[in-house]
Image (cartoon, rainbow, N blue to C red):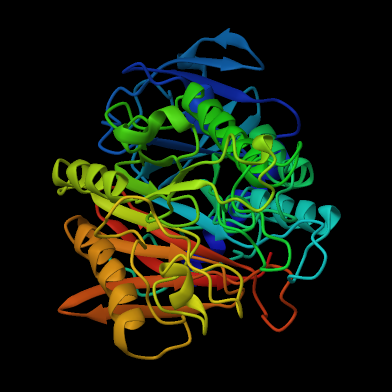
Length: 473
């Protein structure tokens, strides 16, 4: 208790004696100070250094308010004093105090949201203003370190500093961004734009309301074909466009590891159609993230011509996902030793209707299945019973696909899976045929029956997920 009070008194003194002046450093080893230092505006700066950085001789020069000063006139001299990780270090210059804490970048946090349904009618929708508020609260989490009560507190995690204050280092949204086949303007304004301004990587994938080549209802079939500027292939193309633009932005910012740049997992056989789901992967802070649009078994399709020929109810041509799954399997075989985090919109086994999505069935009650033109291990080129059947071919077929994905996931190191779709939280483990894959399902922020609206996930470099906490933003 005495130690805590002493530390608090030092912090208060630092805040009181430092008004608007700012001390900055030049660091060795090619580390740019502006990239690693964060001042909370109250006289305290946290310097988060790459894991393994040697603090000996780290500081080579000192400046105050941008003007170089003689390091020997600073007490203690920053270029010669001993620095330790997680230690409060106070430097004084001309009767002003400047507080610093050097932190090794071993731990980081990912925030997961899903099913925002911005400005969607029904569907536990959020308004643009409500989603903006949620995003701003995520951005603010932990940004005033040491002066606020932590939004999230992790406990019982081996090696985690007791005073660790989580902040959003990367944010994910797991699909169903807004209204059916929307252009995503409101979603992007209330999420992606805000995170760009805050320099927090924001990655999102498509859900069944964003990218779905299947028709929605029996009474108004879309069949994946182009219908004007909205619906069908045109809307799917728009969804993939904004996802790729967002990915390209963060790639250009250099946030992905140099040995783990963003790559797309695609089927080389159907690239010319342009309507692949374009799943992707990247490394961030020495952890591999695998991101699927809707789900890893989403079909490729060609819907460019049928309505143009006046065949209003004609189906598009669908292709099995085998090529994509084989490409994923091959990629994973070369990255088995990487800690991994997986995600897709559709859960493994949470939700009363989840099986029909694994079977590529569309709107409930109509019993339609989108068949693939090619005979396939993972497509739907054969007739199966309705999704509501609890046994027989339907269950066996859905389990086969879930087992196939679990088999791939289980090849990687310490994998954890995240999903959305059903608008409620769940922590379930898919267990079948000796497979065991843990899947956290994220609730929709607009679901009033849920007391929280996101997961905050603690991750350790090179080791993967260590803790998952439901949080209200």
